[in-house]
Length: 278
Image (cartoon, rainbow, N blue to C red; front, side):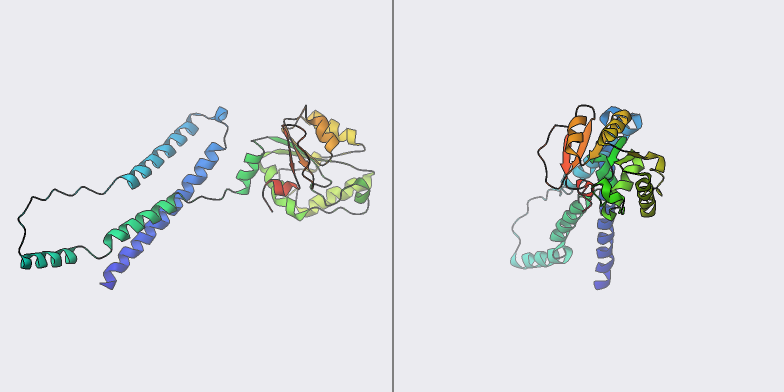
């Protein structure tokens, strides 16, 4: 008996694992589809969404539909005591103990596996947070670099290790420009060397020509106005306020959670926290 039950148990576990993979596939596909703007849907995207909808409806109907109806038994006269005992023993032999509960447990496990939530990837989070923006401008001090003022750049330049993952993910689908105010040419060289050493230029999405330097804060504002990005990331509240009328979205990096100056201005203690990296 133990040998016959083992293959059945193994097949149930295999079925559950198969349903888990199918559920994860459905969840990721639906997340990717719904992150796409409906204005950009083509016929292939519509067909994919329709296919997923049919698959979900089919799965729901499969779990909702009851078992096959039993044939109606004709009425019989009350059996004798000996026949009742024999019938009871026959039913006990033909119906394994706990078969119904095992079937319900299996159905519950399959349903849980199919609709188990899947954590989105960092790439999906970045795209959703940036609302499918294609061009991003970002200052260096206080966002990508540990230093907070141009005077500190004359001594040393340190790239935040915690921000690298999010920064590289942005470069995969966004045209990213980094910019900063510096006091001399030597500071520029130190910044570029620090970024190169940290591996910022290795992904191919960001090149040195897209790291811009200026000598005044007004110069950085002018850079942003000329580039016309979908998102600008900055730590200076005055620049954020000045650009609110011209830039679609802004992210104000500040440790103190300032009051929202405009509907299109968001705030976060750091860039990595905005994307949930820490």
